[in-house]
Length: 402
Ligand SMILES: Cc1ncc(COP(=O)(O)O)c(C=O)c1O
Image (cartoon, rainbow, N blue to C red; front, top):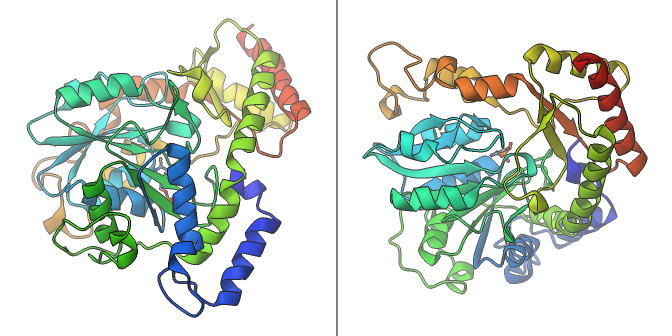
């Protein structure tokens, strides 16, 4: 189960009932609508406050948030965007959907983008880097920002899996130029479907609003920031009041949940102890991660498979909270197909998958994820559950590594 999903309760129900009583499910008008006091607006303000960020814009999903952010940045045909090969579907598809070319990069043993890949992959067409803070752990943002700035690239932080995580005292989502969140069912908090875009830059905010609201810039937005951008053709990714209502209630649960998860992780790791051959995921700032999915690497793929099978037999699932795979294993990448060939960023001649989109082009990432084991801990787990998971890992791994 997802984290926020486990904690859905009376406040979420009460908020939704209030929206229903008013009858304005659309955030900007309807019977009894109070846009500036509405739930979608309040949710945006709460997330902005947590990040000490000037602008937050609620949208319909994390995928929509990525497309809106890329649109706000002005990304399109002819542009290249670097992203980790180990990342969610939409990180790749959102780039393709705006007509740009996704350029896949290796991850390192943090399971986040290897910062050195930025230099290796930058070409005259590269415009920016899409960084994913994978499963509660911030990428090494100092290194990434330095390298991106040196190459005059913007940075989009995809924080979909890491609401509340920090890096050297800063919240994820506040270090790049623009950031995105997802509030899908399995995320840190959920609104069923939902997302958010954060930025400190007024111009990017206005462009994001226009991307998400069919090019419009309403009075509500003018009150936040004066318009300066000529209206352009946007799409419709507006957050509903229903999503905002659930989001406000879920948001109040984030920080206590993170404290709980960190405590569980510490208990589980203490119980596993130090085993020769077990290497925990590298975390650039260990004080800032969320702790709900911990990862370690074993010497071989076979040992990782054997541990998962042995733990499963004892009722402990070591399946991660996410369905992330390497992008090269997905059909859209293997085919290179787009909704129309005219809009494809990929070459139309020559063999496909071309270099840069095949498994053999990512030896470090393939090797790492083959040897990887995840240890998921749930929001409703107790300290005893965490200790049990750790004990099972220690005992089974002890046999495998003996
Ligand atoms: C890293 C990352 N980016 C983007 C998304 C897309 O979010 P959504 O499912 O809300 O469209 C997800 C989640 O599914 C994700 O994990």
